[in-house]
Image (cartoon, rainbow, N blue to C red; front, side, top):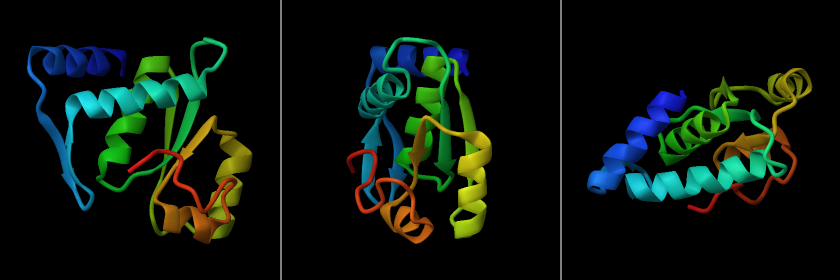
Length: 123
């Protein structure tokens, strides 16, 4: 994934571009890279490589941002979908022990996720 991040970054450096269009609007590559860098820092506050993101894969800006962050840290991307049950989510937390959970606010609330009620990333 590091190569994907490097290529995404290089392309954004040449010219910013719309990388994602979703229900929240248009998101530029540079914006997604900035958000990914913030998430990568939160995942690895001591600078140690790695980190795991448990991600609700939903074809949104969050999916791209979490993927880029995992690539920036040399970490792992673990996916769940919107139809994951509360029990499945709890089992995933126990098994995976992620450094960050990225999902839409309604899913976090439904799953009773730590910090639910506030999306982990702005937007």
